[in-house]
Image (tube, rainbow, N blue to C red; front, top):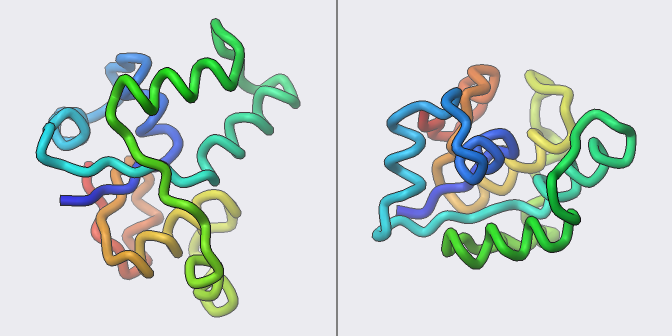
Length: 128
């Protein structure tokens, strides 16, 4: 199964945060699953670091490169086909990063690991 991680799911998994549900943790840790990360997630975290809303113990680039490799995650590049649905996607969610993650999941027909129930208003399978 291919699953796309919402930004908080990525962070909560790699940082061992107890807010991550058991189903989410098991899904991400399952070696048979292909876990993908949107560039929207590392872009969102970089912005939050730059405005002082988030911090990391190690440099940003080092953190992401290490976590992606050590957890066998894969980057799902943003392609024009992923952005096209944003032209008509309803505004159930106003966060541009979440909207892009939803659009990627719709186009790729993959599940999203997220605790954000607003995503249920979209045509995506949300695992939590």
